[in-house]
Image (cartoon, rainbow, N blue to C red; front, side, top):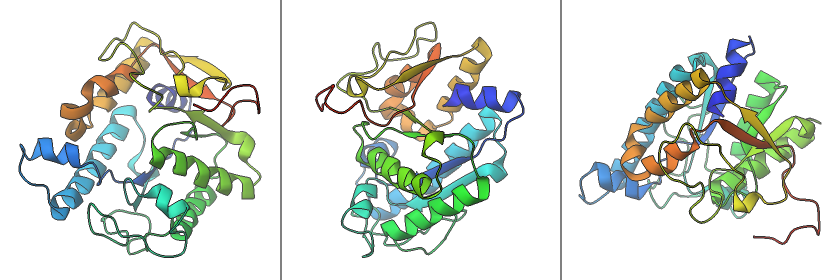
Length: 255
């Protein structure tokens, strides 16, 4: 959403960003940063704090005020278990060995790793911001954290009568998507295979908006050694958003 965020800010809108996790379960990332040294839970906790700092830097590159950033701090690669098996019973991250929100600067330090606590924090963000539009992962995204984020947010928006304010994007959209990999700012982003049948709307970016999105992407330095060609492939002439979470029933088969 980097280009959209930049446009909204330039036109006087308020923009708020919430992070559900702090990226502390990405073992491959930390393995590269440690140059192959054995990765410990302490290393991954340090990675979570580092990635929160990078998220703040990316927000600065887009012009989002730091007061409008919300870090919930729930377990990376653990959101689906929180939605399903650990809604009430605390979850223990197999990566950081944490069972509760532990990072400075999070919304509810000490909150248990439960779906109930996460949903309560997300409800608090919605109540504080009262958003007119919410951009969130599609449930068709292949990443389980993205799927769970979508379900949590849809449920909160549903209770508030704001489902019509949701707009969906896909990052993990299918094998090898998007192509070509790498930084190609002159190319358009096409819909993902996993998004077949969704109501995609193209949001065309200006050159300045692309440049701001590029700078924000480069702020995620800890991920670039592993994922740079994938991440930079999203800096294109447009962004894609769907007004619907799923295709019309019966029209398209599940991926």
